[in-house]
Length: 266
Ligand code: NAP
Image (cartoon, rainbow, N blue to C red; front, side, top):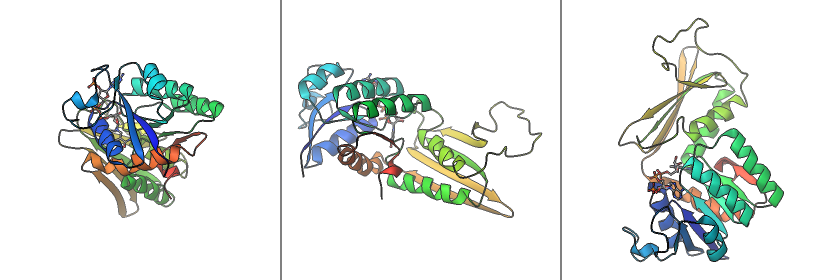
C-alpha cells in the first residue's frame, strides 16, 4: 500500500491524541507534522505523553503545509479552527479529514464548493464510530414506519457545541424520509424555556452534558401502543479510530467533499 503522509491538528486534545497514536501505529501512514497552538518548533516527542513519536510541531498551518507537505490533514480541534484549517488545506491541495463538529450547513456547502472547484477529496464526519453510523441508518429505516421521534444525545461536559453533529445528522436523515410534522399537542406550552429541547424539522433534540460520558445517543420512536429505541454508546475514544483510518485511506481517492461516514462505509 502507498504511504500516506498525514498531519494532525489538535494533537494534545482527547481525540487528537488517539489520532496521533493511530497514525504512528499504522504501517502505511506517516506522521509528518502536527499543528498545535503551543510548542511551535519543538519535536512532538518532547511533549508530555508523546515519547518516541517524532514529528515537527507547527503553529502556523500554512508553513506546515509548505514545509511538511502532508497528503492528508486530520482535524480534531474546534469549529472555528477546524473551518479555517479545512479551507487552507483545500487551498494547498491537502486533503482534509475533519472530525471536528459544529460546522453549519452553510459552512459545509461552502467547503464542498471549494473542494469541487479544486477537485480535491475531503471528508467531514461528525461521527467516526461505525456503530453510530449504523444507529443513524437504522433510525432512517424506522422513520418510514414511525413518524414521531425524539433524539437524546449525551456527551461529556467539556463538549463545546450542542446539539451534537451526530444528532443533527440523524435528524436530517430522518427528515429526508418522513413528511414534516409538528409533534406533540398543538397547544403544547413550555412553562420552563427549553423543556422540549431544540428542534430540527419538527424533531425535538435534547442534549445532556455530564462528566463521565463520552458520546451516546438514543433515537426514540413512539407509535400506537409501542415504542422503539435505537441506542449507540461510545465508551472510549478508540471507538472512533477505525473510522478515521478508513477516512484517511478513502479521502485519497475522492475529488469532492463527502459529509458523513455513512457515504463511505459499505
Ligand atoms: P479537546 O480535548 O478540547 O481538544 C481540542 C484540541 O484542539 C485542543 O488540544 C486544543 O488546543 C486544540 N485547538 C483548539 N484551537 C486550535 C487551533 N487554532 N490550532 C490547533 N489546535 C487547536 O476536544 P476533543 O474531545 O478532542 O474533540 C475535538 C473535536 O472533535 C470536537 O469538535 C469534538 O466535538 C469532535 N469529536 C468528533 C468525533 C467524531 O467521531 N467525529 C468524536 C469525538 C469528538 P488547546 O489545548 O491549546 O486548547
